[in-house]
Structures are given as structure tokens and as C-alpha cells.
Length: 257
Image (cartoon, rainbow, N blue to C red; front, top):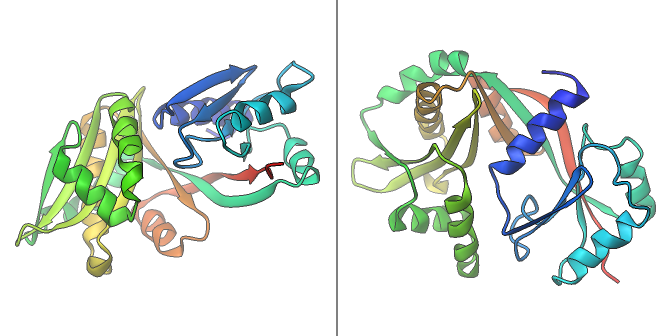
């Protein structure tokens, strides 16, 4: 998968796995809003050609202004080439440069399977997050309490089949969490987090091993994830598991006036 059209299809599919509270089409683009929680759920998915409407920029700014939010654009290899410079000229600030990474599901399973057999942790796989999983997720990610209702709604809106994985130590402490969803021969992983004081002990690989096994069992031939470009530890982990960066994206945050 290496053409602009391939990535356009992929990005729209990936966006469907992180459904916002509100979504409005503007030509090929999507205006997404969710009270300001996460850029993915509060940005214009600007993939594909420019909207036909000549006032598309003003309409986007009004959409977000009406909700008390800045206009934020998701810019990627699938966006019109001139869009990023246009937004820069209007004062847009680049933030959160990310990689989209891919790996063959069978290769992931083969590399990670040995880490699935650790005896010092056990894995729970849930079809939906229970209150304990949700509480652990908010704590490990350091999210504010007022964001909980957004994340509960987001995880509920995520299409099935999906899995919410929890790794537990022998003493019953949650050491790692992750989420997977599969459809159309692909899986997407998100919410991958290891308890800070348990990092560096191989628990991340054990978590990925369980995500890989679930993904293969649910028909995935490839696995996709998104990671910040400056997250060196995560990049090393994913690349050693078999993922490769395939495309880049970032956000342009427009200044509110």
C-alpha cells in the first residue's frame, strides 16, 4: 500500500476507529468535534481534494468557533500538497508530528508469540471496557477526571469487534493496557500504555503479543498504529516488533481571533 489513494482510504478507515461526538462532511473532508478532547476527535480530516465551496476555510473556522474551539487541520500525505503552506501563511502552528506504521499480522504474531507466555503476568481481554479498565486507563494516561465521559463515549462508539486488554501482575496490579479493533482484514491498535514504574521490564512486548494474537484471530492480515515521531522508546518497540513507518501526518492549529 503505497499510493496516495491507498493512504487516503486507510486514513478514512483509521478515522472511523476513533469516532468523534460530532462529524460533518465538507466535500471529501470531515469536520470533527468532541469538546476539545484529543486532536484526532477535534480536527479537520483534510484528506482528498479541497472542498468545492470557495468559502471552505471560513466555514471550517465558523464550525469550530461556534463550539469554542480552534480550527485544527489533520495534514498528511493524502492532503492537497499546497494546504500545509497555505495554513502556515495564515499563522497555523505545527503540532504532534506522527508516523502511521504498518506490520504484517503473521510476522507480528511470530515475533511476539514468545512474550505471550510470561508467567509473571496474566492477560484479560474484554469486549468492552469495564469500570476497572476505565479507571486504570485514566490513571495510567494521566487524563483529567472531566475527560472520562468523553473517553467512555469514544470507546463505546468504536466499532466491534474490539478488544480491551489488561495485563495484571501476580499481586493483581494493572501493569499495561491496550485496545485493538479489526475489520476488512486490518487491525488498528491504540491506547497502548505501560504503568510508568513498570516500564523497561518487557511488559510492553507482552501486551503487544496479546494484541497481535487477538488481531490474527479476528482476521487481520495487517496491523496499523499511530505514534508521535519524537517518541523514541515507542518507535524502537514497534520497529523491533516488525512495524515500519509508512507515512507522516501532523496537525496545524489555527490561532483563534
